[in-house]
Image 1: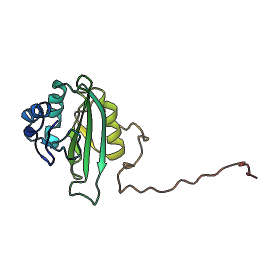
Image 2: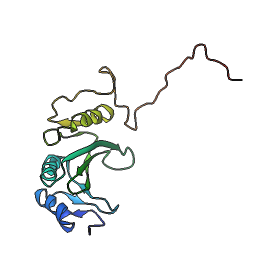
Image 3: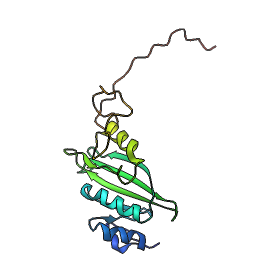
Image 4: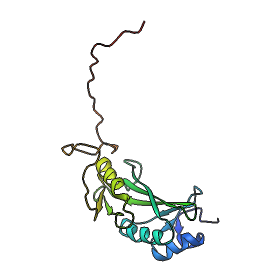
Length: 169
């Protein structure tokens, strides 16, 4: 598979990725790692996911977030991993998300299995998924304050007391 080595239009990539570039002109291919990676603005994420689904990527295998606090100008990046079983291929979609408005469209209408992955990203990082059917905490208690996987979240300490611990001789 030939492809772009630097970020740029998807049209220079192989046929499958080129069709995604036609559906979403704002998408940029990044093949510098040898993987199929597309960067897209948040406003076009749902449209790209629909085009990917129609193009054979029938499974959303993972959604996560990377926090680049103090490293990049745009703090967060949502990472969506799609899988095509029929083409034996993976696609990674990267979406920059600003700290001031951490929101992207939900992929649940396109990939229903994204439900719990989006809830986890919301719970751990505070990224909102617009249009999600039930965007509530999934790992932390409902009254928890903050998002524990953000790089600026205070780790703190929890005292642990071991009762009747046996001595090792």
